[in-house]
Length: 221
Image 1: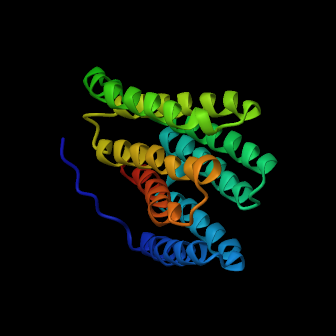
Image 2: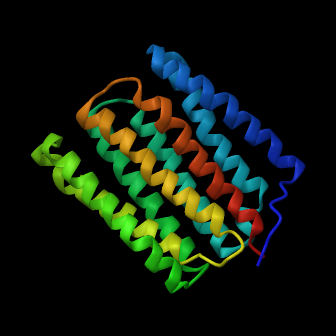
């Protein structure tokens, strides 16, 4: 079933805000300008929340779960700005809750075993790659949270596959995968290499993922 993805005029404002805030955030992070980070990151996060509300997130069960996930991710974004291990762990929990909310949204939207099967191999490969790559760099106190988080990301990807065949599958599956891959940039910055280059690709990918999921709520009837 084909669907025409036509956005209402009211969606243009949050999309514009997201574009400007994300570009500014990438520049500020790359240059190490922390005041700009503290301004632009909340604005970029508020933009995806705004888009979901404009698109009618409260009008369906799917939209409500996506909105809840976006709120959790906004909380995670704010917590990660502090750049210390305690806040990182709290942010990890917030994002984990966001992934679980997305799982609930996807489970209520579709039951495509074909999509689930197609998603299984790449999702498991990402799981294995992530753990083999990260574990040597993760301290003992963070190993369990990181493993739990990685497993939940994999679960979200599998649940997104269940939406295959639904009108919004392109948005849900692309959004879920972009979110999961963007987490590699966060993990690399936190545990492997804190280079500002991580944000050059991770930040746009993350906020783009959230905007795709936020927009998807407007095409559920």
